[in-house]
Amino acid sequence: MSSAPQKKIRCAVYCRKSSEEGLEQDFNSLDAQRDAGLAYIQSQKHEGWIAVGGRYEDGGFSGGNMERPALKRLLADIERGLVDCVVVYKVDRLTRALTDFAKLVELFDKHGVTFVSVTQSFNTTTSMGRLTLNVLLSFAQYERELTGERIRDKFAASRKRGLWMGGIPPLGYDVVNRKLEVNEPEADLVRLIFRRFLELGSATRLVEELAVAGYRTKSWTTQDGKERHGGRIDKGFVYKLLNNRLYLGEAVHKGVSHPGEHEALIDGTTWERGQTILAENSRRRGNATRADTPAPLKGLLRCTVCGSAMTPSHTRRRGRLYRYYTCMTAIKQGHTTCPVRSLAAGEAEALVLAQVRHLLRSPEIAARTLAATADSAEPGDAATEREIVDALACLDTVWDSLFPTEQQRLLHLLVEQVGVTTEGFEVHLRAAGLRSVATELQGAAA
Image 1 (tube, rainbow, N blue to C red):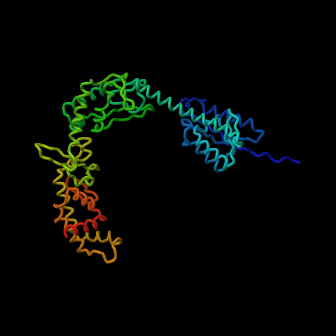
Image 2: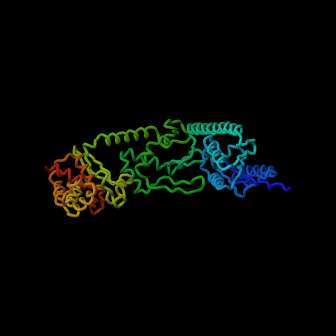
């Protein structure tokens, strides 16, 4: 009698390395893991084990999660029925997270796949094998968390010593062997920014000066050789620079300053004077309340030239309040960067309101209002076009008697957006709000 043909067990070798260090070598850690796995499969040839042709190797991927391309490909092949056994050098090559391991074992069982570690004797088909693997994975996860704590502690200790731990190098310094060394041309720019801010007392005027002079933010090269070119200096960059204690020769970690190993670019007196001016400017901006400076067009105005929103602002001269709507591009990069720049608030509000009143008198608007509310009207409660026109025309009568907050609320019901150009305004009405405004105006006029 002839014996039954031996069943072939298709084995896939999975390899992983956490870092990319050494992967450029001719024979690296991934190659060593794969050779060990193939040798183990060859030793089980008498049991019908054969290696599948694909390579499942994740170089530079952590074992703390499942977001690995080769692992995803392996799991997809398992679901397609192409793999019978997964071979790894050590169990933590597959995963270091206990919850992920449980998911993998469940998937393996579902598709009848076994799991083998070359350097550890495990058989996932028995309860004792599962228990041993769970214990081992618990220690692997503990080791991973402990390594993370060590890295964070080392990072904190390095920052306290003033070492640079990565990121965009600050203006005024270059990173050499993880230490900050002064870049003299950039350091002169840093000193200029501090000096001129103390003289001008205004970040807006300072940004305009720097733009005219052609100064830009730092240009630098990444570790992989990519060029990063500097951009235009705006107010956000200036405020960040003026508040950076790095320029005092200090290293800051989690809000705590430590003496750094790099050279300071400014002295303590300059720093304190700058902080005083920043605090005074902040107090002046915060002293005026919204009640003192009504802004009914807030959130509606948009500069169509540069695409930025226009925000309300104000100033007081000789006891008189002056209100404006200013383009955000002009605020960040200086008034010369936007042809619209700013608008006198009173004039802008009057012009927009005049356009709104004109639009509300048109039969087309009344028709749109009727169409927008036809479906929601109660039986016997449908308004005629003339009633809608008469109600919206009441805006002229009641507008001046409304409180600023009520004026703003009605405008936001009526208007979707106001586009601002160098030549005027373009008002876009909100059809859905016309009926509710008409109802309110009817009640106000009654």
